[in-house]
Image (cartoon, rainbow, N blue to C red; front, side, top):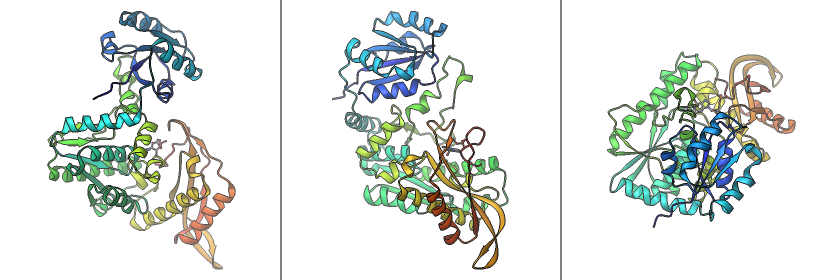
Amino acid sequence: MKVTPETVVLINCGCEGIQKLARAVRARKVYTMVIPYSAPAERVGAEKPAGLLLVADGPCARLDEARQKFASLGVPVLEITEPENAVEAAVDFCFKKCGCSGNWDLDKFIDEAVADIRAQVGNGRVVLGLSGGVDSSVVAALIHKAIGDRLTCVFVDHGLLRKNEVAMVKEVFERSFGMNLVCIDAADRFLDKLVGVTDPERKRKIIGKEFIDVFAEAASKINAPFLGQGTIYPDILESIPFDGNPGGVIKSHHNVGGLPENLKFKLVEPVERLFKDEVRAVGRKLGLPPELIDRHPFPGPSLGVRHVGEIRRETLAILREADAIVTEELLKSGWYHRTWQTFAIFVPVKTTGIRNGLRSYDYVIAIRSINSVDAVTAQVVQLPWELLFKMSDRIIHEVPGVNRVVYDITQKPPGTIEWE
Ligand code: XMP
């Protein structure tokens, strides 16, 4: 039987930290939703809330409007003025005033999601684009639990992947989980299109368009009416205009990735109610390995945006090897999980050096390590010198074509996290 969690709705009256508060209350087993203050009272009422938290950064007209509008729902209301320090007050309110029992539980979520997928898909088939990232991996594991081999995962190797990425994806999804996995080796197709291209935006567009074409070709052969997607709750929240004005959207939710109109899929989005760390927790419960669940964020265009200038096979191979060394040393030293993203960048500049007593004239690899909470701003991590020296030493001795390693000490802003 489906257990509906008790829901407390956070009304967003203009507060940057609202997602964090919603997540913190969920961590105490009360299910929360975030709805903008401009929504009609019926929209909020449809969630059958046990109570409302009106959240603003301070007193404002939006708070007054919300107070009046939502009073008609007749449920307990608490106004949060300082969201950063309000977690205890909010949790107390949920349990003591709203009568919540704390029934939000990820084990129950998994059972419900599996039942929902079965109900939605019936005897149909689902196709899913697997990126090797957390969200699509967890969705694959959930859908597979629900419908087994009626799920087909498609993994596109665009030639810009990290070292051993294809083998890892095969190992996890095909061999450990026994999923139907179609791996498409499209490396030549992508790399040929990138010949002579140096402009970062053009590179991104070429990679993005080619990806959709390759995925669409593969998906159309599978004859599945459903498309699984790793949409998560922040994707949804950031695509809802905060004050009813579409200009207020932080990012549009187009996870479908611009698939052609004639590929008419019905979407299966089983983690669209979850925050990122809940998605990770579900992944762990479903048995996905830590090296997949706890990975650093990785950009869609992959090594393509970490290779400055024209991408050539030889220089891409240099970057791939250097990146693998950086990751390996980071893991060994325990710093991997202490940074948000740490990676190598290929810099197409040759400098003079000495190798085996002879002059060398080779490329530069940069290392970047940052911490962040939301990727909007980022702080440079002061990695220990010994670790940086180890990385530098290994890169210079093990990767032919590199004779200099530099450390990027640029905050975001002004620097973006990725170099391109
Ligand atoms: P920037 O470079 O804009 O990166 O400071 C912010 C965060 O977004 C990631 N990133 C991307 N992710 N497709 C993605 O899926 C992209 O094209 C892309 N560009 C950057 C980046 O790794 C960082 O976490």
